[in-house]
Amino acid sequence: MWFAYLLRCRDGTLYAGVTTNLRRRLAEHRAGQGSRYVRSRGADKIVYHERCVSRAAALRRERQLKGWSRQKKLDLMERFRIVEKNKPKS
Image (cartoon, rainbow, N blue to C red; front, side, top):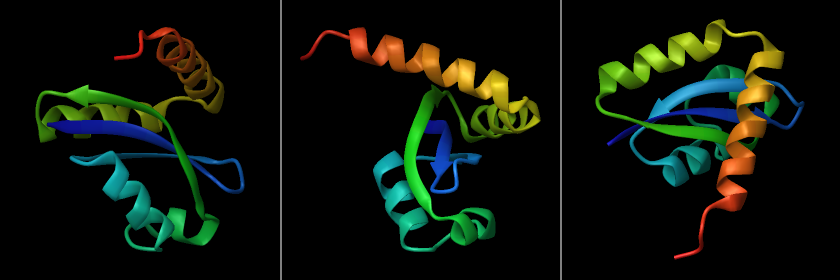
């Protein structure tokens, strides 16, 4: 299973990426592994993620997210936060 995600950096900027394991990828970002962009700004937290059916689909979604304005990404993150908050606990 693949995920497209948005990561908030410590300076408040947003980074879009793909992974098969969100926890591992966040740990890698925090350890300074991976993207130079995040390494120079520091990783804060993953603020949005979605499942994708394949690596190709995740990469397409990542490209789409990278093309969006900051405001559009913030709107997506807010909708995601509301949905996650209202999910029933299992």
